[in-house]
Image 1 (spheres, rainbow over the protein chains, first blue to last red):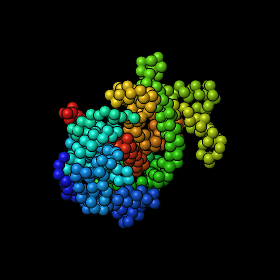
Image 2: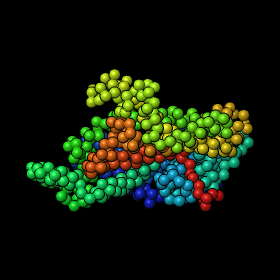
Image 3: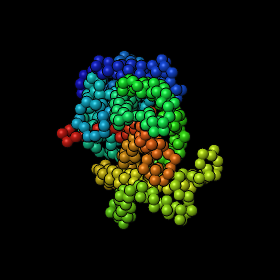
Image 4: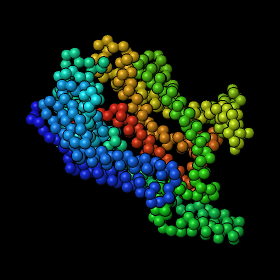
Length: 177
Length: 332
């Protein structure tokens, strides 16, 4: 286990997300504001535009949040404040999202990203692979999940294996309960 | 999920621009336009007044402008929800399509329900009873459904429906209800006629869906976690429902991308054979007569629904099974 580390989202990924949010918000909200569109279309565009605005706010929150990884757990310091301690962690989910057509891809090829969700009672921390040091967090979460015999779903197991973290079942662990 | 949704929405923009460009070019490719046909008819009839009218039309619809300007005007109108005017019907495109859209949605909706209700249990049964007599029988029926051309099945069912049940040939309702307001009798008449197009349009889709579901479920059932779960003594139904069935649902969800455009496309050939008052024959007629705004806007609607359908299925698949697919060189 490494010494406590401070993790942040990379500037490039944050800038790209800001650009996406701005492009989407302008493209969706400009037509209803500037030209005469039908009511149904206006509502649809405003709804989608609101989604882009929400995404922009979420990017801002991520920009302002710093994650601290330590032997005790992981803590999010900032507006998205939360903490999950390894000894009380109740769930680990690792999902992979891919925006390209659903065909077989090679690990770490661009066009997709991993999202790790860690839960402890009412606290949840969700990070994705654009966070610097993401692999360290996944590795630690996988190790703790294995040692504590947490139930992991087949999707998480498959994604852990794809990242090189083989999650062999330990004594007493229920793969499918 | 919000990041995934935003990424997918942004990808849709260039896709739709590309589709609109291709649609417009294809519609413009044949020589002449709808007004050229009108001019020919005018000259044949020796009328002089209609030439002025055609000139007004040409100016009004911008047909005298360069192609790129026509495209920009068309797209700008589409973005505002204005699909233009149909030359042939001399009505806004929205009105022309709107009249038959509800009937198309009824037929397509019933077909989708039929496909899923029939395919799901049969697919599960075939996979869980692999190589049984039931599996062989249902597989045979499935291949029969895949191999039978829809229009042929339509003609056979029209004949049988008339001989056995006395259903009037063709159409989606008895002739007395055509162009009449909605009544209980009209609704019952539609229900009486509905089963033929539903079975005709849905058969091949159902057969294909059964094959995909069976193959997917068999793949899952042979995986290690299922063997482990069975070895631990879990009830077979629980083993099946917990994960394998969930994973095997992927083809159903992926199919939504194809289902949405089908809802308004109205299965053109079958609609012509069965004389259905759906949108399919309208599109065919618009393409034949080069009614550019009607054909173009309709094709754009189909493309938009396809892109939206793929978006919905991608979102659902990401929710249901967000796992990485490894290529051969990616395995480690």
